[in-house]
Structure formats: C-alpha cells, structure tokens
Image (cartoon, rainbow over the protein chains, first blue to last red):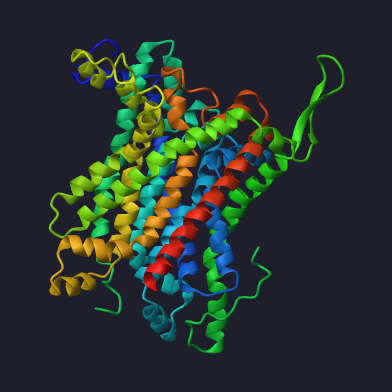
Amino acid sequence: MFSTFTFAPGTGLFQNLADLFSYGDGQFGLWALNSVLYAGLGGFLSTLVSAMAGYALAKYEFRGRSLIFYSILGGVLIPGITLAIPQYLLLSEVGLAGSYLSVLLPIIISPFGIYLSRVYAASAIPTDTVEAARIDGASEFRIFRSIALPLMVPGMVTVFMLQFVGIWNNFLLPFVMLSDQSNYPLTVGLYTLLSKGSGTPALYSLAITGAAVSIIPLIVLMLVLQRFWRLDLLSGGLKG
Amino acid sequence: MTATLTPRTPTTARSRPSRRRRGRSAPYFFLLPALVLFVLFMVVPIIYAAWLSLQTYRIEGGGILGTRVRVFTGLSNYVSALTDPDLLSGFGHLGLYAVIAVPVTLGLALLFALLLDVPAARGTRFSRTAIFIPYAVPGVVAALLWGFLYLPGTSPFSDITNALGLGSIPFLKEPGIFGSMANISIWGGVGFNMIIIFTSLRGIPADIYEAARLDGADERQIALSIKIPLVVPALVLTAIFSLIGALQLYGEPTTLKPMTSIISQTWVPLMTIYKDAFLTDDLPSAAALSVILALGTVVLSAIVLGITNRRTSGARS
C-alpha cells in the first residue's frame, strides 16, 4: 500500500474481507451490530422526541416558548468534547458508564433535530386542519398522532437520517463512555485496530477495509429513505 | 425550568373552556421528554464544566504521597488560557481554515440543491446519494484517506507532477495545508448542507413556480429570484452550523498530524482542550478553554444572525 501507485486497484479485496470478519472471533460483526443498535434505536427515539418537541414549539403558543426554543438551540454551540467529559462523570455517578445506555441516552436529545422539526412542522401542518380536528373533539394527542405525525414524515425522515449517520460516525462519546470492547460501535473498534496497526501493518489494512465496509449500511439506508422525500407536502392538507 | 409558569391559552383554540384547559398542558407534555434529556445531558454538564473551569489542582501534603486536590481559583484558568500564544495561533489557524471551508461548502451545497430541484433534472436520486455519501464517511477515515492522497510518498497527484518534473505538490505545508484541510471538510460537509437546503426547497408550494412560469420566467430566474430568497432561513441555519462545525475542527488535523511536522499538538483550540483533558489531565484548564470556545461561538453566531437579519429586512422594505 505504501509502495504502489495508489490509483492502481489491488486484488486482495476478498482476502481482506475474510480477514476482517474473522478478526478476534468475529469482533467486527459484533461492533457492526452495536452500531446498528446505537444508531437505529438512538436515531428513532431522537426523531420521536424531536418531532414531539418541534410540533409543540411550532403549533402552540405558551409561556416560555421562545425561552425553551432558544435554550435548546444554544445547546448546539457547545463543543461535543466539553459535554462528553461531564456526561461521563455524571453517568458514572449513577453507575451507568460503560453500559449501552450511557451511549444511547445522551444522543437522544438533538437540538438540531428539534430545530428542523419545528421548521418543518410550522410549514407542513396547516393550522386550520388542527383547529378543525379540535372542534370535532379530537384529543391533543390524537391530533398529533393522526394529523401532525403523518404530515411530518418527510421532515422526520431527514431528521432520522441525519441522526443515524451522526450516531453511526460518532466517535468521541462512545470512546469516552465505553471500556468493554464488546460494547464498542464500529468507529471506536476501528480506531483500536488503527492504533494497534502502527505496530502491525496487517491490522492497518483491516481497519481501512472495515472503514469501507462500515459505509455500506449508510448508503443502503440513504437509498431506502429517499422514497419518503417524494411525498407531496401538501397532500392531506386543506388545499386538496 | 418551565413547570412553574402558567401557560397562556393557545390562540389557535376556539373551543369550549374544558377543552381549552386540556390544550394548555399539551405543549408541555409534548416537550417533556426533550426538556428532561436536555437538562440532564446538556444543561447539567455545561454548568459542571463552568464550575470546573473556576478551579485548579494543587498538591497537598508532603513528598511523593501528596494528594491532588481541586481548589477554587476564580478566573486564573481563563487568564492563563487567553495569554497563551499557542491558543492565539490556534485561533489564527482556525480562522484561515474557516474562511476557505465555510463559504465554499455553502456555495456548493446551494448550487447542488438548486440543480437537483430543477424539474427537468435527471438522475437526481443517484446524484443526491453520491453527493451525500462523503458525509457518511467518518471524519477520521476521510482525513486518513485524503492524507494518503496528500502525502508526497503516496499521493497520485504528486506522482503526476513528479513525472512532469515539477516536484511534489506541497499539500501538507503552509499555506497549502489550510486548503487541504478545508478540502476534506468541504468534501464531507456539502452533502449534509445540501440535504438541509433541499428539504427546505421541497417545502415551497409548487404553485408559486407555476405562476412564475406563466409569466415567462426560466428555471435560472426562478432559482435566483424565488427559490434563493425563500430558502434564506435554511441558508442562515447552514451557515451557522458550518461555522460552529469549523470552530470545532479537531479530527482532521489530529489524523493528519503524523504525516506532517507543521501540525503541532495545539494546532487548533480543540486539540489543546483534548491535550489538557486527556494527556496532561488538567480538566479545569480544558473546561475553561471549552467555555471560551463556546462563548466565542455564541458571539460569532450572533454576528452572523445580526448581519443576515439586517439584510433580509432591508430587502423586504
């Protein structure tokens, strides 16, 4: 790898893949499953929490609305490194550090997701429809579930995708939180391969192969979720 | 923080009192999970970091067995941070990098989003995915891959220039390093920003375009005079997020560091923070630096918001 012209393709792809999945009794597969769990479940919960908050911020007027909104948005300004260390100290106080929850819980709150959901809810949910449902006697929860959520699907798909990718590629938080290799997501696992690789070049190639493989699920997800962007935003609204 | 406030009647509710009362608590109910998590995982850690930044370690007791205790020192961490020449040059590096990375990222993202939104565009799914995929590549891996394309020994570009007798391209020397560094984040960031702008373009009702088309506007005119003004909020948002991202530059220089001697351990502020927190084990100093960086980010974002607000309100009047 260090001696050849780098655009020239090699021939060792399948050998690399076989090595990768057999490394450390299939550790790579375990890391991949962990990543799927963190990104999938974390992304889903995060999207749901963001959608609820965004809907409330966009479609209700209540005391403290601006305060809540700008405080949450301000959360984006804090460097992740600043948060990760206190989060770790906090979670180890309650004995959660090192567990799956220690990585899952902090990523559910996404100021950016909430912002995006609010913008989207404001433009996609006609206030007249909500009012009409209210007059017909629908409960606030039912209005959210049956009217707001379906209209917000394209926006939520965007939030989910960005969160999924963000969590999938998140390095710092799991790196700080986890100590047991069997809980690692792909990023931290690959990093340990890379840092060991400075002594053993074979691990270096494994890490590069692993990095390439770890992108494939994201591409598949992207292709699947694209369909939902095609929904016409105005369908189901009053304009029909 | 909001539990004690009495909610105002939603102006949208035109219903009987009983129903109105139920509607009052609804927004708080919807916000509850977000607020609880926000307080637990953002507000509390921030307060903790701020509190930590006002302290310092001191060795108490004699000899080798002296214990390290944290004592309150006021603002001394801030004073030593702000007078540290390493930090100032770190901000200089950051500035040069951001001046290249932010405008180019936004410009390309807007261009791609507009091109993909043209009705006649073909292969949009493929292009959208292709532009987005680099964002899916973890920053560390992207920096590593680009690093090999930059490094004189392995760079295919330098292979070509060497063959032509021009010598290697100085990707990893000053001032080329700023362009090289910006290039990595532009490559990774365009897709993300494009998605935000594109989502916002999709939210524009199509009948606006119909009217413009009937009036004889072509796609370029529609893009320039209808679409761009309507996606200004998304542009402001992406600008601020790109700026924030630029200020938090860390992964790229850390990964490129072994490849070049000009990247020091404190090349950008976050590298200094990381060094203080994990290598020299000086948490208070790291906390103080983080607070400075966060405050700087707030000020910059406020300036960007201020400028754009004046522009848009000026355009309206």
